[in-house]
Length: 191
Image (cartoon, rainbow, N blue to C red):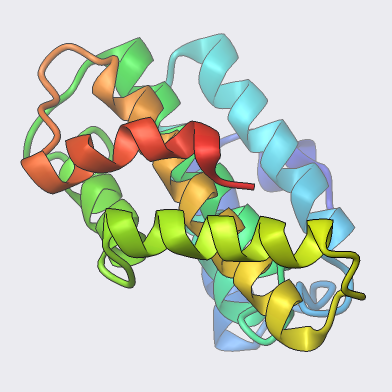
């Protein structure tokens, strides 16, 4: 993976390179097989964006997130963590630059929709019942089976998304809807 200087140390250079990689006209490590190189690039891009308070670098970082997430969709577990990281980065950008409805980076709408995907899968009461059932099965000494592990993963997936909503709710200009607000107290109960 080239270092940022190879792109002329500009966000436009990185964006042009990513366009060529997407088109298949430039070789790069596959995110599906070598995610660490891409994560290293993300660290560099985010660092540039933060050091320079430059949203152009942030846009490129989020484009890289989207590319890597798209290429790793088949990798269990990694997609959720990387998606949560990308959304938490958006919240960070809104914290630094302010909330701007309609802006491609600073609008909380896409983040709220992403969180909403998780809380649509269960009601608060169903989530609490599933948590109790999972812990009961563990405390009963049952060996973890695929169903139990799937339930824990599902609950953790919801918790990771709610964590982003919790951070977003702290920002001026962001109002969570009633449904999301009702989920926030459940965060502590989730595994």
